[in-house]
Amino acid sequence: MWPSDADLVRRARDGDPAAFEALVDRHYPDCLRYAFRMLGDRADAEEAVQDAFVRAYRSLWRYRERDQFRVWLLRILANRCRTRAAAARRRLRHLEAFAASMDRTAVAPQPNGGFGRAVQRALAALPAEQREAFLLKHVEELSYEEIARITGAGLSALRMRVKRARERLAALLEAYRDD
Amino acid sequence: MTDRDPLLDRVIAELKQPVAVDPAARRRLLDAALAGSRRRPAAALLRRLAPVAVAAAAGIALVVLAGPGAERERGERWTMPVRFALAAPAARGVALVGDFNDWDPDATPLEPVGAGDEWAVTVRLRPGRHAYAFVVDGTQWVPDPTAPLAPDDGFGVPSSVIFIPERM
Amino acid sequence: MRWTAVALCALLLAAAPLHGQDRRLDGRLDAETRRAVLALVDSARAAGLPTEPLIQKALEGESKGADGARIIAAVRALLDRLHAARAALGRTAGDAELVAGAAALYVGVTADRLERLRNTNSGAPLTLALVALADLVQRGVPPDTAATAIEALARARSGEAEYRMLRALVDQDIRSGAAPAAAALERARRITGSRSPVIPPDEPSGAESSASGGVR
Image 1 (spheres, rainbow over the protein chains, first blue to last red):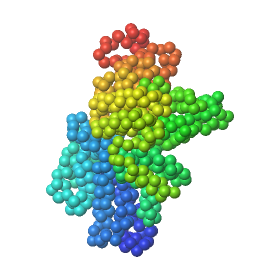
Image 2 (image 1 turned 135 degrees about the vertical axis):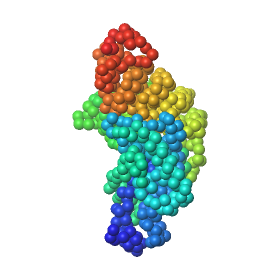
Image 3 (image 1 turned 60 degrees about the horizontal axis):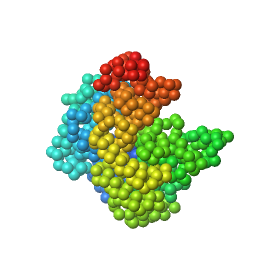
Image 4 (image 1 turned 30 degrees about the vertical axis):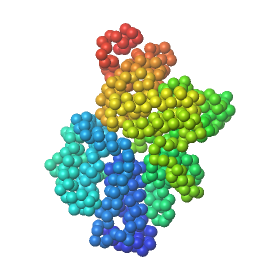
């Protein structure tokens, strides 16, 4: 992609606001998608993404070109999402407790195809760590090494989180299997 | 790869769907990052601090920030504009009270509409269940005839309920 | 102007201790009532229950001219019902659901009917259904019958339009002289497009007909 992220970062660091705006336009959609899938609420997601970009802008001087900008940005965003999720959001706590009683959590199929909403509900029922690992692996399509750089967790722990997330999602959405 | 489970493939395809970008949110982001000053909405700032105190201060923050641009600043959460109306031809004044304005009869007066047979006001409400009522001429409590009833909880005065769905 | 507002809020926050203060009650409740209400709020918080409905209940009472004792009683009763609503609706119930559940309990719907409603609903928020339920009861439909009617709509995955229709039509029927119970069941049947009558559980199918003269 021309100009490269590294080029844009360099120009933004030199004080070119259009370059930063271009970075935002390039990465905002995926960031919003990730934050929304993690947090389940649009307004929260928009705020988390805003926080992340503001922090990114302020620490552009710290970004090293050998890191992929996207991975660097996602690390900031994943942190923002984790902070938000931890800050006494009753809804998320309840959904984690919800996941603990698995036999009750199967999501029944909705006749007019609410698959998307069912998926979001099932996702929200995962523990945050599993949700995060699953999204980064399968939706953001990062390698386990990149995910390790983002989350600070070890490779085998991450593999286990993704595996458990897959099993749980499959169980929660079992009713949709032969749709 | 998830080629061993077609169900998970569908789940992942679903999750890969983009989420529509709100141009206003993008604009806010750029303003926040590039303007150099901390122009984050006060409500969001408050949220980072003592969560209990937020409930108290947020009410004040909303009042103080009212003015041009307050629309944007007020919302750390999405709100929906709702028009409340009451037919009260003989009234001198009608107020809206509810759990969104601390049941304060001075907070949200209705305006007469047209010839004055109807009174109305539009307020922005967050998702969830809200109880409310009209107060006519400062003394007479009137529930909304078009809305479900809220139990009176022993206060002996009726209220109504409105439910605002989540924007999703 | 915004900076002044932020500074003002920061000052207020600095002044408030972390727990047990809500400045909105100052100036509206006397000290004793305020203390009692805040203690109940603390109790709710400790139990992981929403606190804002309790504050609002106190403010509502003050606004409606209730005295301190009545306000405290109402807030305490609401707290009890929030506990009961959570027990019936589950720990995943949101704040709005809990408050709506508490309202339904207040008007006489039993906890086990709430639980049954939760179980019909495959996880979607119940707030709409619970609001409609409390409303039907307040219009004269017996609590169990109202619960049956609402369960039928919930099972059919009804949305706002259906609940609103149910309320409006039942209200209209009652005003035209129909018995509330029959009206609720019949309208629920029609709205859900069900071909069989909506039968309240644990009752022989003839009972409603003979009592109210008309469930087909």
